[in-house]
Image (cartoon, rainbow, N blue to C red):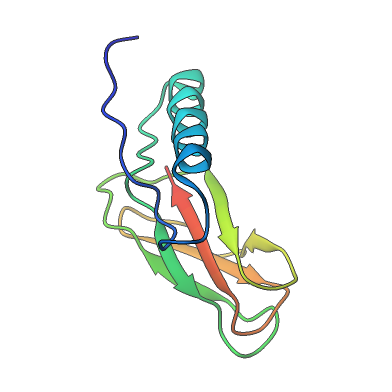
Amino acid sequence: MGLVKRRPFFLTAGEMTAEEADRVNIYFDELRDAVQTKLDTDNVFNITTPPTVNQEFRVVHNLGYIPFRFIQTSQNGPGQLYRSGQAWNKNVAFFKHEGSSIEVGVIIW
């Protein structure tokens, strides 16, 4: 593994210390190396789920390929994010969430 430039985490200032952010960045770098795919930890999609529970919503990713994995990185309320039954394509991924109006961070690859 070569030299990896550490980047600031996507949380706002005051939500974690610099040391905690560095540990999170190291974790994501190791995760990316472990899965050896097109995982881009710099590209976190921050979304708000619909106000209706379990309503399908889309995340426009424009990756140029059909992704098949995701990791939820953050959430500000209860419930679980999951794939809807709609097929993903080269530009859009479809999800549902058990909560309403929840802010969620997700990496798609």
